[in-house]
Image (cartoon, rainbow, N blue to C red; front, side, top):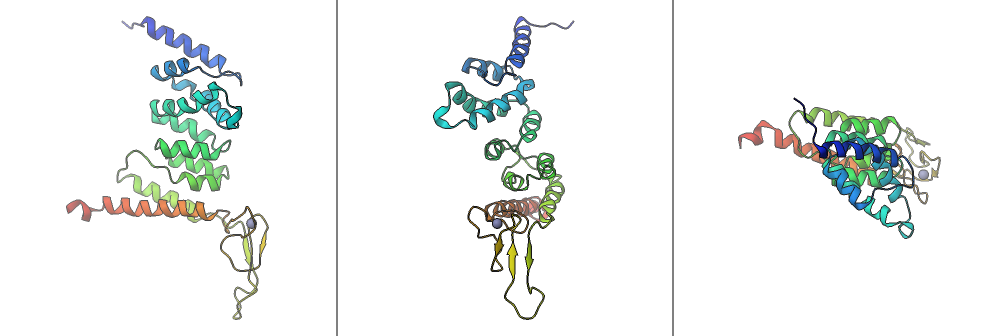
Length: 234
Ligand SMILES: [Zn+2]
């Protein structure tokens, strides 16, 4: 016969209470609440708690309360504790409120996820998606390779958002101009826009973001080598 312990009943009661309370923007879990939420693996609260985390981290440091600081400290622990599937579903649902915070979480907690990154591309968050490639899975197996390569293709095949104009096809070189995705006109045939605070290439990515794709490519090559029968027989 199914039995429910007093502790389980109380945890369920509190979970529902927290879910209601946390709907309000200015309500944050206390440190004690956080510990209880983590100990009882309350993954159902993940979306609400992620919202708190993003609100806290978007609050300027000097304006943060102890609740903001506790949230910034405890949410990553919570996310690491709950089942990885729930952590990924929560994280990739919002990668635009504070892209750097979301990417850092993914990198620190190994929350790389192909579908999540494809969703980012679908939402036109191309630059953040490229940076998200720096995250990894906790473990890889040979079956991952094709999907990882397909994801790389999606980045290689990103459409041009800027363009080059001038005598590119002519025999006499010079006068080539690069117009970046933001519409800045660069006199020379540069790869990255030289306009202050821009730096976009023809795909709409900065040098740093292209380097993330390069690192991902390099890691994939290494994975392929590590999984190749040749290295296995050695
Ligand atoms: Zn530009």
